[in-house]
Image 1 (cartoon, rainbow, N blue to C red):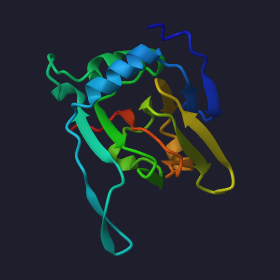
Image 2: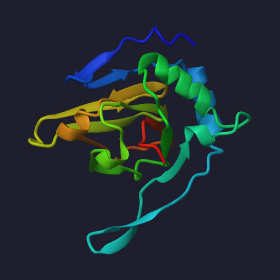
Image 3: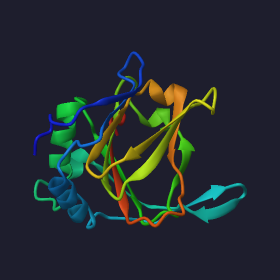
Length: 191
């Protein structure tokens, strides 16, 4: 896999690197192998309160502390981390994953919870499976939005600073969609 063949696109700029996108971070065969292996992650359905009622979270989730993963883990997270760090060098400590089963699964516009991130450290998101559109918009002016199609085998890096000024989400779609995974590496405060 040639990690340096893919050109980087600068979507937003800030003093910490902004939002950058590599549409072909890894080749299709590597992305497919990662996708297949991650089918065996500990996927969970969740419920949460929204507008005074409890609702299903419209996607499955899994999360791991990277130092808790056994060296013989069947999940490819250690190899993925090494590849990500070649583009986005950071002391990533945790990974959160989302499985969007079809176009009805989504995540609302949000920014990552700042108290759960180490200031100054980036977030790196690897997309696997069917491409989905991510919307990134300024919190101050919702008309200033960028849509990016997160391709199979792509990498999106968001600076910590971008979480203060922008929000992002994966909207529902009526288009027929197969499953998609996002594998998100973060630097969490020590446990």
